[in-house]
Image (tube, rainbow, N blue to C red; front, side, top):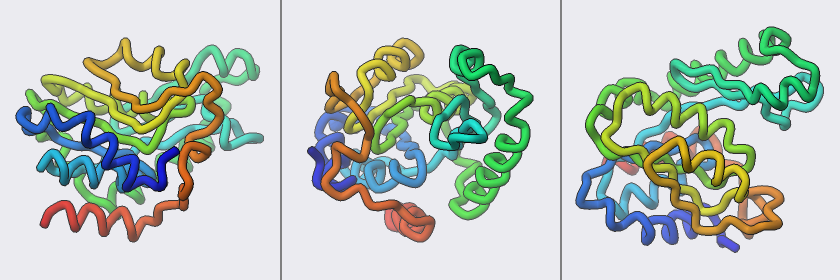
Length: 209
């Protein structure tokens, strides 16, 4: 059990310390991944950036992610869509709303130009945990477009099923805990308070100092 995201960040940073020599770029998934990524970036003396990915939920159950979007990427879980009797066209309205939110966050957090710095670099994507992993998958696909030398996903906790699925798509996946009875990311934190836009902006500002 992690006390909070800062505690998770400290433990993750220990595992990632060996990458400091590679001068990596740290990208965190807002909002929850940013406090974790901030601690890792400080420990590795690496710049902290954000990459926005938005989950696409089914209209009658928004928490059930059937896809995700990230800059330049639209991704769907085709198996789940079939199971639910849906086509991607049925989600046009939801996609439109999530695109608007992605644009809002890009404008608010800034840093879109940081994607151009990725080519030939070691890139570490950080989140506070992996459940379905669909947002992380979209973010990884987006980062790949910029041709990093090495792409690593690092999380404190995750679903064993999701980890097995994602680790074949990148150079390395680091997960501190993957319990067989994984239920939800928040159940592995004592304090899993929501992170606000203001806090994200503050972490990004502090990371530059």
